[in-house]
Image (cartoon, rainbow, N blue to C red; front, side):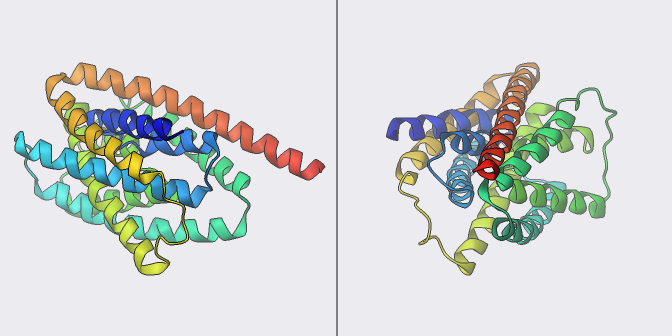
Amino acid sequence: MVLVYFLLAFIATTLGAMAGLGGGVIIKPILDIYGHYDISTISILSSLTVLTMAVVSTINQMRLGFKIKKNMIVLTIGAILGGAFGKQLFSPFVISINSNQLRGRQAIILALLLIIVAFKDKLPKSSIKNIGVIFLLGVLLGTIATFLGIGGGLINVAILCIVLGFSTKDAAVISIFIILFSQASKLALIQLDSGFSNYDLSMLKFMIPGGIVGGYLGSRFNRVFDNRVINQIFNYILIGIILINVYIAFDAFFAILYSLEN
């Protein structure tokens, strides 16, 4: 079981750092299927692993020449505030509905969003420069990522490509930068609110090393491969995550039906 958690973190964060996915969009649904932890614990395990990856990846990208620009800072500030808002939305859901309903709804929403993302190359592109609009985009991205319990990388990359006109390769690097601060703010709010003592985080000692190695290798691969390859990897992973979330939605639906019959 220990090896499974390490490999999951390693593979998810390597792909995440390379294609801008973050890794949470892979880690969360896989742990949902694995079934060892509740939704809230899975979200924290995923966030801490992805944060570790994002720190390593961003530092490595900066060493390789990545420059922080004004629009990225504005987008990130918006994502941080959106993360706080997303946490406020998520908390009532945890209280008001059971775990199967929650994971089913999250899976359906995420699958629908990712189907839209799948058509990012077919949608008309723009290159918005307005700082206010960029800030609001950041708020939206942070809210979605936190509410769904993912790093938000797939959606980040799509928005950066469609609305701000970046290539998939460049959007991947910027997405990780956004994820770094949005996940840090989310975890800081949890620490200030209830802390982490109520969660079983024993697997973190295996997931975080996976995130460190994945963050380093993924950022290197991002530099080695061209935009065409990064885009193909992004699309293949996107299809896989959509199918996984469809499975989770059906599984949650049948679990709810079974509980009603008994």
